[in-house]
Every structure is written in C-alpha cells, then in structure tokens.
Image (tube, rainbow, N blue to C red; front, side):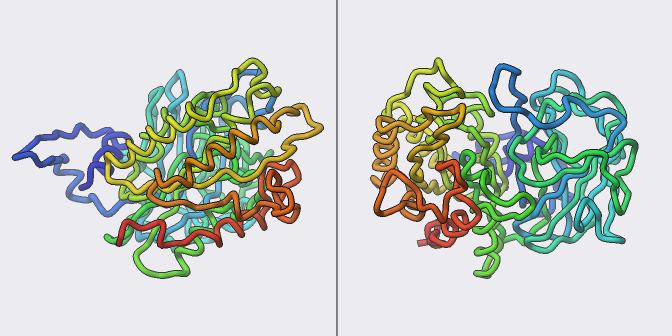
Length: 429
C-alpha cells in the first residue's frame, strides 16, 4: 500500500493505522478486516468540497439552505470503470452531525431516471443509514455494481432530518433532482426542483484493475468547467478522460478537483490551493500526476466586486505558492505538470465584476506563465497558446470564448484537451 493510499484510507475510512519504521523503510499495518476485502480502490470521480459563503459575497448560491424529508439524486460520469463502487460523503463544513437516512446507487438514465434493474442500496459499516460528524467524511461499504469507463452513476440520498447544505460543490454543471419523501429507489424520480450544485457527495471510487492510476486536475473554474455544457460532460478534464480511455493501456482515472473561484493564496469560493492540496491531491489513492492550473483569480479578483478591498498580490507571491505545491508533490513522488493561464482580456467587461482585467494584471499573467514555462514543473501544458488570438495576444479567440472573455466554451475545452501530450502525464521515461 502506497503512502498516498494509506493517507486516504486513514482520512475517509477512519481506521487507525500503525506506522513503523523498520530499517529505514516505512511499513503500514492495516487492521485485518481491511486486508480481507481491501480491493483495489481508486477514485474515478471527484467534486472538491466547499463551504457555503456568506450573504455579503456577490454570487448567489442557487440551492436550498437545507434539506428535510427529501431525496436528492446526483449524477456523475466516472472516468475509469471497475467491478464494484463506493461513495464518499462529506460533512467537512457542517457544524452538526449529518443524518443520511438511506442511500442508493444506480446506473443513470436521462432526466433523473435510473436504468431498470441497476438500483443498489448503499450501506455504511453494514447499516442502511449513517451519521457523519461535523468535519468528517464517510465512505460506503463496497457496492456490487460493475461500471464501465465513462458511464454515468446516479447517487440518491434521503435526508430524514433538517440537513443544512453546508458542504457543497457550487459549479457542478450537472443537474441534480430534489423530491419530497424517501424516493431513493424510484426508477423515475419526479423532481420538485432541480439544481446544478452538488451537496455532500465528494467522490466515487471503483475496485479497478491493479495497474490503474490516477491523475488529478487541480484548478479553478476553467478546470471546474464554467462555460461547458450543463449535463454535457465536456469540460477539458472530461475530454482528457475520453482520450485516455481511447488510447488504451492501463486505466488512468481523471479526478477533477477544480473549484470555481479558487485561488492559490487566499480563500472565498473554497479554501486556498495550499490548504486543500493534501485533501484533494496528495491523499488520493494511486495518484501519480497532478495538473496545476490556478492563479488567474489571485490576479483578477482584487479591486473588482469579488474582492474590492483585497490588495493585488505580486507575481513572486503566487510563484512562491507554485513552488510550495511542487515541493509537496515531489515529496510524495508525484509528477506535477504546470498549465499556463489562458488570456483574459476584457474579462467581465461591462458587468459588476468590471476591473477583473486590466493591462497591469495582464503583466502578472505573463509573469506567471513565464515561470510555468521555465522548467520548474515536470512538464508544461500550454493552454494559453491553444486558445489565444494571435492577432491580440491578451485575448482568446472568439470561437473558444464562452462570452465573458475568461472562460472557454465547449469547443475551447475540447481544443485544450486535444492539445495535451499524453506522454507528459506519465512518470515513465
């Protein structure tokens, strides 16, 4: 068992591992019950947990502040397949225990439906219900449901008590279905309301072939998929997962740990990159590579309505953050690839977020990209050159622009994924 795997087991299963140094080697001893049915568990889908923000932040949450006697069905497309699945639920930002009355997993069909005959109840330590303490996560027991690569799963959760939706993933870009009552097993869930934000569900794991590996895409809204098609699974990490499946060879999971609004140095729409790197990257089982694309919000937010009183950071401060992430990845033997920041000329021009882009901020973007290209990372993905307008280097091509001059559209994301040299993602010589 690798160090990364042991950390993940300790985090989500809650076992107490004994670690002993024997002749300079690290030995991890798990309880016999774990070893008896350890499987080869690896993440196949993720959604990084975020706290809800306070009402003074000028971005609406867009979902209920709590659930009560309701079922919420969430759909997720996996990257690699496996013979069994498990789900991970998080109460990381809750202040009270989270009660899960019942949970089911099934193959997803269209419009909140599930594939007939694929529904499976979920248990937690043998129980159909679970109580998750504040700040904690819960991993389900293995579910005997085989899934193919790039298939879609529906995870249905019933909340019997008032459950504040304090742990969420805001930019889910996938429709979730909310209905009154316990409807977790309904083949056709008749939704009372819908939302595109995720709550409590943070990961799906599969019992995968022994040669499976994981790649984490660690970034902001451009990784999270702002500008992609809702329910379209056409973010650049989605397209990368498709390319890896088509390429064949050992399975390579693509775990999207992007958070819209994420920054390297400071919090707001999620905690800063340095604070969440252990949880979202280093603790993932069998991760051996991470793609980092973050920093544009550190540059763009200060002085606009998103952070009107924040001082503009220096390029050196953000680069120091990059260096810390590089060192921490290398300490655990991970390959870390830097992705350049795409152009953002006139981003949010004419909106309440006017001032996100200025010529002075463009100089910071160029300085960050110069560092990313400098050789400090183990490889470079030059997204900035993929979408740039060669006639106006501070701007993206219109055909790749969502319309806000910051986020790519689905075509832009497809072009970005197509430009990745897959050899960059492997530690093999």
